Image (cartoon, rainbow, N blue to C red; front, side, top):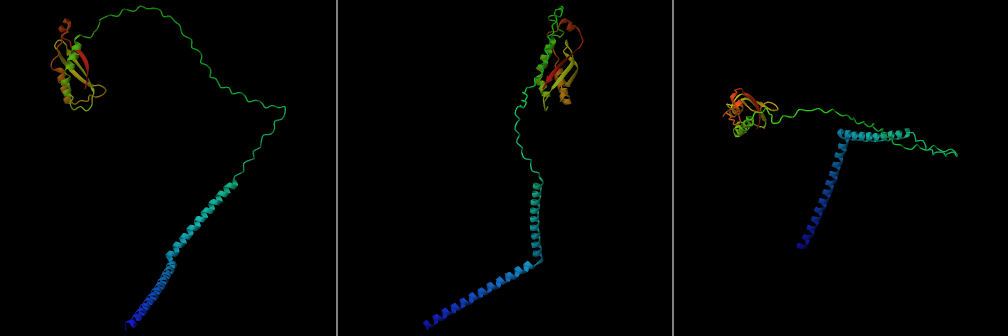
Length: 236
């Protein structure tokens, strides 16, 4: 029983494998045929035909453009006239010498005429002697400037908040014997004064009080009651 059943199983396996191979080959053939039919239907469709025609026209246009360009280049070369041949110079006849080339001479600029020196003698004239030690500046003015400079720390407090440096011209009437100022004026140098009204009042207050005291006043200056106008520059 065992020996007889073994060949039957082998035969059955071989039969099944043969049927599988036949079925596989038949399926492959049907797949190939389906692909071919689908490709043929696709090639026969209108969109594919239009695309192929468009590509064909594009190739023809490119070929025509190349041919036209070649024709233009050929016509341009054909229209150009050939250059005349170079003729060598003929022999010089005996006994006739060619004139020599003129020598190169650099053009010289004409020299400017010499200027004649003017010679003259001016007559001597006597001049008056300079007066020594004569000055109209009062002696107390230097003391006034020193006292204004001594008020710089107080003036600096008035310029707090100023964005940029500048200079002011301070002009006022000053009664030297009493040290009192009158009609003070602050003017910006080079434009408008870069200070506000509060700073203006602060500066005038510092310059006016306390009163100025001078030790170099002469007797005549102490007796007269006229005001002298003075001017100073204040930088900040």
